[in-house]
Length: 518
Figure 1: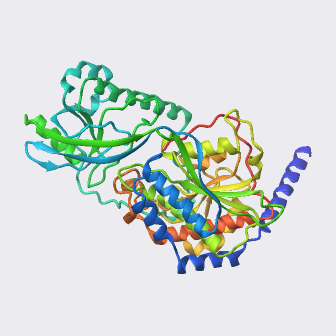
Figure 2 (figure 1 turned 90 degrees about the horizontal axis):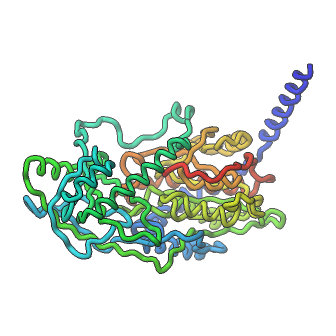
Figure 3 (figure 1 turned 90 degrees about the vertical axis):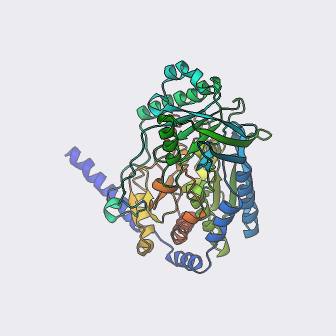
């Protein structure tokens, strides 16, 4: 009987909770105003142009990043927003930008090569020429092999290339939208177990050692030609080489698989391959601070205006293109969302704060630094500001439209979000999954005990074409998808700002922050 009593009491509590959630008031009139304003007078193409084409590559701490940040701050001021600023989150390290670059065949003939320098690559100090030697990919992580063959690398370009990828016709689409079945069966995404993460950390330490050994051999540069770098797309990232105490690294260049395989075939058939290379990158350690962009729409309710609703995405990007889908798209949508709310003269009860993060690609550095400064210290002490944040909304999975949201295991939030999505069913957005997603800035808030959420997006060609590649440019943005996303984000943010209660929270995580990967 005692067991039945508790079971009945629990059931009654659940019914009461369900009844409470059923009474959630959704301001559909404001949602409609937001939708109409966006569909008739969107600023998304203009915002996208300035963040990508005009600002250029936005590597953290680069001139392009600061151009974009300064433009965003000044633009939000023109819109009438308050407290707009480039806010330092901590020390990042050396900035870097490419000022001049070229690479081409010198022998057996002259022809250009599709290639990009890796961020924080060393410089050639003027044009250089030399022969190519191939380091088989199977031996590229074998430090004993590299030390043994060091004499072969001296004065030469070292090409790391594996087996040729298959060039058989691929009839799978490079872009896709999520089906109803996929949305109904969402799993945890972009998540790594601690065990796997430790393995990656050991791997990163190892591959960081390899370039140093090749540099010590006297090699001219390292060229990499990954199997995925084909059909005009080259994926270009960089090891973390930005620290102020890091000496200049060897020159590192990512080239297309087709060019790499051609060089490999030529050397295997006994033909000498010589290249011309010029890499001129500028390092800057005059200001080693990292910066986020922040701005606010002040709350209007005397009792609630000290509370916050936050939204954001990361503004930094890799340097082979202009970071349009990763994550210009998220920043574009978030800027458009606050512009909509401000231009419509809506009166949020709580203060709405946008934050565009730096250093995400190097480990969520900007958002984590911000959270440590404002909400939860490295000693795990919770700061007073933490209790004032109702929720944080993030967008960082490409240019695709919003199809739902990850509830991050927050059971109390699910019925709330389900009701908020009802007015957007005709826009294809309705899924609220209890699954988690990692690898982006909402994790910093989740760690700080603040409800942090990432929206589910259609993948489009994010993973196959644009993510961290030379194709991540304005032309791959889907403007209608971004408009849909701005409508939903602005509506969710406004609803959170006017809701009677703050959003329900999960228990605070006790452990130290763990980055789940990029």
